[in-house]
Amino acid sequence: MQFQVPQFTDVEDKIFGPLTLKQFIYVAGGAGVGFLLWRYLPTLIAIPLAVAIVGFAAALAFVKVNKKPLIVTLEAAFMYFVHKKLYLWNSNYTNTKKRTQTETSLPQSQQDIPSVSENKLKSLAWSLDINERIRLDHEKETL
Image 1: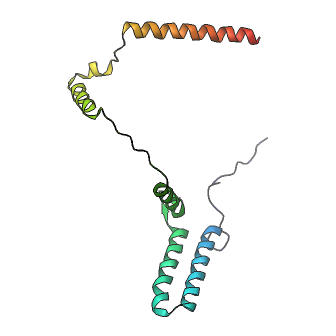
Image 2: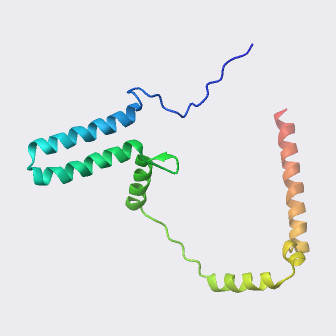
Image 3: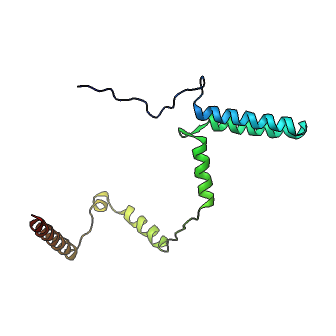
């Protein structure tokens, strides 16, 4: 039996002509606020405010940044400015810089080989053996 799989699920439906519901709400809200400003404020003050608000509403409705609506970008910017930030200080910066310069001076074949001491190999093998035995014992107990 074959079933149809919905395609383009991330595309919103066009409800009001060429506009989606969100776009219509942004445009209608901006136009409504612009009209109220024009109606109740002096013309010299109302026109610049109305143009700014209608322009912002149109930007919210139609502008996309990195294929995401402008409102998502504005929300991310607001959260960035409001929340606390964690700054980390790397005290080994000079040592790291010197180390990277010496590593780049080595031939490519020596850079790719990780250095592992014998003690590290023994401890790794021992921990793998122990963990394997613990897992096997645990499986036997559950049976």
